[in-house]
Length: 275
Image 1 (cartoon, rainbow, N blue to C red):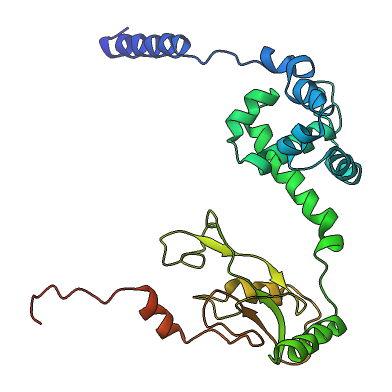
Image 2: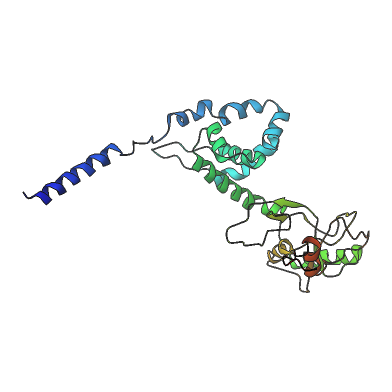
């Protein structure tokens, strides 16, 4: 056996020994702490005790017991998971509790995973699936898409009450700070150096104290209009309301984009020093 062959064998043996030394330890199939979820988890302990106090239950979930049970009855067929031979599935009530707790507090997935004794990835999956189920289940009851006739009736109401033709909705000045979706660019970016979205689309029956023009983009209104499969036959638009240009019976459209930019951005600095 020549010298090079011996060096190669020694190197292979050394690498194999080093690989065994740094081999990752075997992980638990179910961590012992999470095995006690049914005895010490937050849903099986604290939540059950909160049912005896209506006020604390309301503060914890932002829902009372009746609303929680009604929502659970509607969502249970959608969010129930099947037990397997490896582990028992998290019951629908616990899944709904995890999702509502996240939506009510905005706690991190890690914090909720420790309190409910489930994995972090499990919390993330539960929040996503239950939120989607809530949206699909309650959409037709609380945010139905108007038909063509309903769009026309809304536009007629705006014209009669506010003297604003071809208008099918009004958005107030409520801004919500959000995390911008991937590849959205500057769609949700505003002059306050944050990403925001506008909510609160109303019909003509709203009572606006100071209806006026809003700043910047009409992305929220355009998305709301394009969501309908049966839009009005005539051109329509959404109006917006803020606390400027006060007029009790009139809503004026947004000013030109150039005026908005001049209003929200200072003039450029002259770096050359000349007047």
